[in-house]
Each structure stands twice: as structure tokens, then as C-alpha cells.
Amino acid sequence: MKKIFLSFAIGLVAFNTQAQNINDALLYSQDNMNGTARFRAMGGAFGALGGDFSALNVNPAGSVVFANNQVGFTISNYNIKNNSNYFGLNTTEKDNAFDINQLGGVYVFENEDKSSGWSKFAVALNYDNVNNYDNSIFSAGTNPTNSISNYFLSYANGIPLSTVNGTDYYYGDLFYDEQQAYLGYKSKIIVGANSNPDSTTYTSNVAPGGNYYQENSISTTGYNGKLSFNGSAQYKDRLLVGVNLNAHFSDYRKRTSFFESNNNNTSAVDFVERVRFNNDLYTYGNGFSFQIGTIYKATKEFRLGLAYQSPTWMRYTDELTQNIAAVSSNVDGELPADVVDPQLTMVYEPYRLRTPGKWTGSIAYVFGKTGLISFDYAIKDYSNTSFTPDRDFEDQNNLISNVLDISNEFRVGAEYKIKQFSLRGGYRFEESPYKNGETIGDLTGYSAGIGYNFGEIKVDLAYSYAERDYKQQFFSQGLVDAATINSKNSNISLTMLFEL
Image (cartoon, helix red, strand yellow):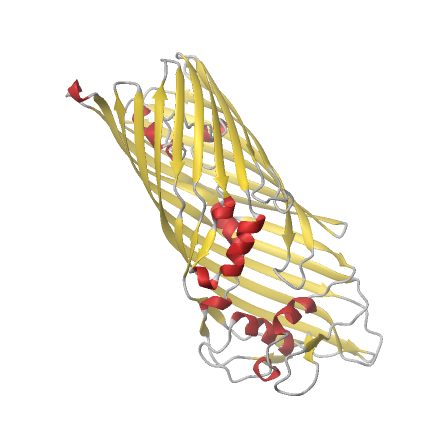
């Protein structure tokens, strides 16, 4: 077995050759409906209600609704099932995760001087796991026309043969496109059109004829967390105002393993018949955002809410490790495998991502002490997502602006109280962030829950379900055929609250 090694372990790659794309922008721009059990049971429709730690993520004015000082935490079980269809073959993959996804505390105090009109204040600190990235997807099928060689050709054409045929590389020598070309050439998946070192043209060395069986396995882990520093106040028992200052933390790991095989080679030529291509990506970063909001009590029962969530300004760093193995054959049988394992971790220069802002309007009606009903409408323009510096991501930002669109979200929640028991239900609908509505489809979710008030201790339990279809390309260029994924998320959350 032949192995080819680069002579360095870590390379710092120039910024303008990074592989960040629209998929990354959406990954960090979308929020799952995580939070307390009560919040999830009611579909997240809390913009005009408050009095819940996760409600602060919708409208920061809601902390002053708390009647007493309180601390609480939430533990959740995440279950996801992904059904994939790739060229007519159906596959299923499941994943399950368990963690503490919410932790918070609030301190409420009355203003003894009522002359100013400001009667009540609250400060709160809350952590929410905005996005849980634990997920597994497996797709397989027979591609009638396109091979993995098209991926490597899309990068190699235009790069001199002397570059992709080198062996003595040092720190920082290879850009991302050169690395892809190097992997394809050294594994003999692609070959030069001629032996001229200055030649920039390549051809496929995968056995022609079509019917390429392909598998793509994706496993992701990590989180996107938000720590909110909140303050709110109540004016003359009618107007509530609040603000959040949010610190964001992101840690994301993705392992992709692609396999391709064919039985097309019946000649004496050494054509590739099997390929295994592995990619390990680690992305980490932090950022900042703010929120402002207000709740107005038009009557004792009827409430209106309006909140603005600023863009999130994130700073990310990517580390990518790749290796590939290819097996060729001819009329005499299989040849020794060509393994390219350069032990190269490409550490990219940090880049910035600005996610879109969000407006939320809310209406709620409280039926005394027996229950309530609430409705939220949110609007988010994903076309405002952008990477910076702009000069390095001009093409990606233009693509984002052209294909992404405004997404509308509707949330409805209700609660009915029977003595110490509370019964809850919710519904949510979120439009696709894409103009075509197909690359990522609409999301529909349902939820239900129950709570019990022991006095100074409250216990809430919730079940939530959400479903969405989307298209998933195995690669961003060259081999761009997509699998259709039907993703189903089922979550169970338990919240414990303690009044102080």
C-alpha cells in the first residue's frame, strides 16, 4: 500500500481560498426552538407574555413579568430521524442526544418611589442552547452519470501540473483548491492531459460508463449557545421594556465520509474503481448580538408585544483535515491502493459572519387565572446574511443575496390551568429561507406539555415535534447531485423552577 505524506502537520491557508459557502451561512443563521419545557410546549409563542426564561430570547421585556425571584434549568433529549432518497434508493439514519440546554436566574424588585411611574424592575441571566448540532445522515444510491472525479476536476483545471504533482510542500504552501487538486491527482482519480509541468488541463481516470454507486455519511456534533444579560422595567403597570446583551459561543464538528465504486473497467487501462474520501471539519467561534423589546398591556387581559433581534456578529475559525484512498484495476485484477494521507490540518484565517436580524410582533389574551392564548409573527431576511471581509467573499455574498429570501414564522400557543396543573399546546410554521422553497423546505412543528406547581417549586414537561425536507449536495461543486432528506425531530424537555 502506497502512502504519500506532506512534510508538515499544520498549514495556514490564505483566506480567499476557504470553502465557506451558503450552507455554512444558513447553519449558523437558523435557530432551533430550544428552551424551557413551558416555552417549547407552547410553540415558543411568548412575545407578549414573558414570565419565562426562554421567553427572553423572543422579547427581553418579559423578565419583569416574573412575580418572584427565580432560578431554573432544563434538560432535554433530542431525537432526530433522517430519511434520505438518492437516485431512488431510500436510507434512514437516527441520532439521539441528551444535555442541559437551559439555565437561568432572575431577580425582581419593586420601586419604592412610585412618583416616577417606574414601578418594577428585573435583571436576569440566562443561557440557552440555541442550536444542537448532534445529527447523523446516510445517503446511498447509483449515480447514472457523475463521478467523484468531477469534484477534483472542478478544482484542478487551471492549476499547473507542477503544483499538484509536488511532494516537498512546507508550511502554508497549499491553498484549498490546490489541496483538492493534489488529493485527486495523487490518488490517480484525475490525471494530467499531458506531461508538461505547465499544463493546467486534467481528465478523469475513473472508469467511464456511468452507474457509479455512491455513499455519503455525515456525522455532526456541537452546539450554538447564547448567554443573555437582561434588564427590564415596568412603567405604570401598562408598559414593559427590556434589553438583552447576548454573548454567543459556537463549537461544531463535522465528519464526512464519501464512498464510490463501479464495475466499468474491462480494459487494460489502470482505471479507478473504488474511492473513499474523508473530511473532518472543526469550526469554533464567538460573537455578540443585542435585543430590545416592549410589551403593552392594553387591558388587564389583552397584551401586545414587539421585539427586535439584531444581527449576530460572529468570528469563526475553521480547521479541516482530509484523506483519500483509491483502488484501481485492469484486466489483470485490482492494483495496490493509492492512499493520500498528508496528515494536513488546514487552519484557516478567522473570518466573520453576520447573520440576519429579526422582528417579532405578538398578541396574547390572558383569561384571568385559568389560561391564555398567544400568537407570534416573526420575519427574518436571510438575504442579509454575509461573510466578511467583503472583498474575499464577494461571490458567496452575491449568491446569498440572490437565492435567499425573507422567511415568515408563525407561532401559536395555549395554556389551560386546572388548580396546580397546567395543560399546554403549540404550533409553529417557518417558511423556507430559499426563494425556490425547495433547497430547504418549510418547517412545521407541533408541541404539547404539562406542568405542576408545588408552590416554591414548579415542574414542567414538554414534547415537541418538527419536520422539514431539504436537498443535500454531497459536494459544493463538480459532483453536485443532491439527495432529498426528510428530517424529523422529536424532543422531550424537563424544566425545574425554584422560587427564592
